[in-house]
Length: 475
Image 1: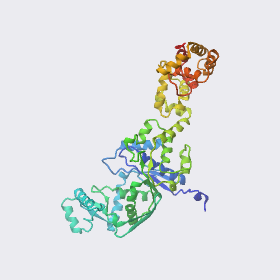
Image 2: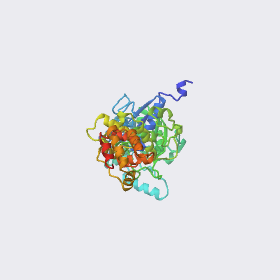
Image 3: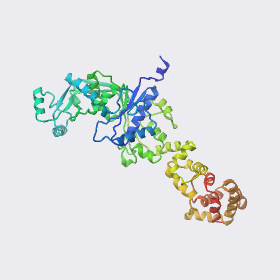
Image 4: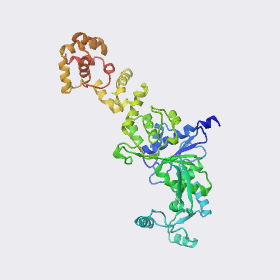
């Protein structure tokens, strides 16, 4: 066997992410994009971005721009897409109407489809009747056997028609799902379904399947809510003699309480997390482990993630989004930031006009203790603002240390500036204090806080003379 094949390398693997530009990129869709990206990268294949924008009323260019921005932020780069044509596009469904029409006509010639004149009101009435009698709702076949004369008559009445696929009776549709294993559906349980809407646009079942075949997609990872769609799409592809991709249906993401992820659980879109200061590497590391088991426990880059990704490790049980675990990944990502990236990440928490060396000193001081940029803002006020007030407990500790304690500290600060070791040594020599009795009064007098970033870097970040002034207050 070829060594690359043995390692799972198959440049013929083609995956895709196919969002609809009708809103923000939510976490579930972002995870779908990530898994498809990783599957393609692991095999040395191609990852496509297709925009499913046939819903003209809800699709917006602003939503499309936001989705592209979020994917780029996540670093999920695509080999072909709406901004990168490769001869198999266009990669916007709204520009593929002629292609869908051609395949629809091919099905008409086979009599594999037929026009349906049922109104939405009639369909809803039939659905309610089926549910009321305990039957699963499906199309009853009202228009399936209409003669050409009957169809002509309905058109003459001004009735518009959808186009329904004529599902064969007594047929079993089987496939092996990459996540759920062998699947079997009886065609009689499906019911004839719409492939073309009354306005002439292609329905999801149809356009989605056609595009996968025409774009050479070999593997489709998508949410398990699409599992019931798969037999319909396989029937379409079989009728047209088109290649069928391998499907894998990924578990849904739930909140910590087991309910579908929603606004009541907090942020649900990539943009919200990006705007609040989360790092892309933190978010993708958390998404990578939602519904996918891996022996890799550390923070991974996308290349390492791709090597560790295996569809066989995709779980069937629903995945629970854990905000605390995301914060843990965020903390690790932040602590790994090089200075130039950390400076840019904390830019909004820095005072205007701060020089480069002062900026770097501030970032070095607070970075080990922040998770989000907003965590640095209190320390910006503490370091660069007026001397902080003390809480009663802190005031008591400072007063107990005594005037001599702070006189020695202030004098040492006047000569050594921001050198904590020199200040502490001088106080120790003058008072004999050590440990918490030495450092806690210093911390409180300098920062107003009994905890936080290490004191030595904080002192180095303070403007010249600030430490002496704060210590002298209590001398």
